[in-house]
Image (cartoon, rainbow, N blue to C red; front, side, top):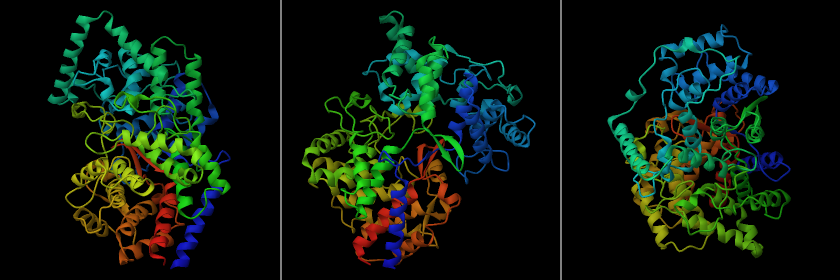
Length: 622
């Protein structure tokens, strides 16, 4: 068995080393389905920036992802198709000019759209897309007035209560919706035959949601009494917000959707479609395009820093020294990307210097906890042996510790952005809040416990332990925020608690161990459906995946004193199924917004099995 594990370990190492880019990073795709591909086609056609080779490639990819019933889904076992996604795909294909309206693909898609209520049954973001491109009338899908962004911090709801990724998308959308902007070229398709009946947008909202809208309106009325030209000041504030958060590549925060909406916000504010900022933004979006199975894919963002930090850490954990050329190049890439600029995180954490890392290759103002601890972990050995880098370490650690929420947990991007009133607004789960999460808290504890000298009795550690223990589910699992879903959450909680001194016989650990063993499949692996995230209940995938298996198995290895039957079966699965490439390999293991945005990390089937196999070898010497 040891020989088999070593053989698989070395095979993964060889693959990772061969995939490294010349600049030292790993540029594996950050794949998020076809939505961004559709938006790119629509953007290029609306602005008449015709890049035919790109559009044709995107059309090919979209068509390949269509299911036999004519729909598009976020993941294979979602059930029936996703209405908003199918509408957007239909629109993009028709707008491309390469797919006829009477083609079998679009006929089947239309049937599904009509059966499920037509265009007006789409989600708010799709309604905004259809409105600004002239397919339906503006019906205020974003019913909050722009003046709301001027509500002071002392008001129970204010703009800075919204998460950074929420602000990035809502800021340009509020401008576009306020102007009721319509940009519709002469050759635009007509989707009128997909309209069944116009719905009253107000009826979509609960009484609680409408009461929040009324409350915000009352706050705005107070501002209007004190200031002149509040409406224009709000628009100027939002426009300046966009300018202040454009990255060097021209994108807004390096997010596709935020940049897409920003382009139309600039048009609403009077810029020509050939304005340099708009051209640069389009070029920035194009710079994130990758190729998957021969077709172009518009990534939502890039995951270069995340991939590079994790892979550098995994390779070093597997025994490759930091002095080896691949690791030196990777770590130099990371060193160059530590943030030195202040970002929005300072709003709730004003007394700390920058020191974090962001997710994409161009992030300079939007660091996150996960990328920061992953980068510090990768740089750990270098900094030990070359103390002149200690300032890098010190700034990073200080930033991470300063970002702990008052409740004891850690979130992704900001501190204490967890106003419960925002849950009453209809903008999608996971968009408005950046509250403490199990995965961020567990992974942070894992890092602090294993890579720093922080005392296990430190008050910050105690608060985090208490938060994690209190958020365990009744069945022994933990949920999470950025992965799928209970397996990922339970794994991160276990490794975090164990790293800071919680013993294997602690009630939380024993219950978690029992849950993990109970969810193991007959083939020795684990697999979880994205439906778990959707309905907040563990739903098995029905098959095992390498990544889920690595997470679950790492948990059991961390807890165990000796090899158990469950561990042995899991190791066998990782070895025997490593080369199988089918839909399980591309099944999403991450999520950005529950029910709307799922992620296939192309690096994960290498990174996590490598960590787990090496931990098995080190711990049991088998």
